[in-house]
Amino acid sequence: MKEYRRITYFNLLTDGRLNIYLSDIDKQAKEMVPQLTEQMAEREGVTEQIKSTNQMAWVGAMSNIWNRAAEMVNAELIYT
Image 1: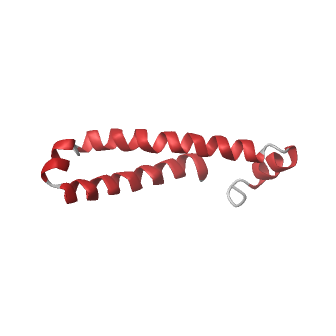
Image 2 (image 1 turned 45 degrees about the vertical axis):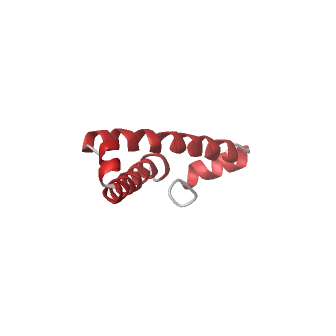
Image 3 (image 1 turned 90 degrees about the horizontal axis):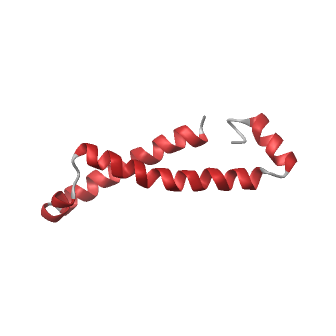
């Protein structure tokens, strides 16, 4: 935030609201990533059936989905 939103950062810092703001962003991100991961897995057909038949393929697919979801949330909440 200090790098991408300097004015907002310094305003929050001087008002003493920076920690509250960052805590709120962290909470939102922690809620959004699992929701987005679930939606993407459903859309891409990564199911429990795949998990039971080919666990390594499921782990790889879910890891890929989780990373993409985290990047999307970071881009939306943190970098903009």
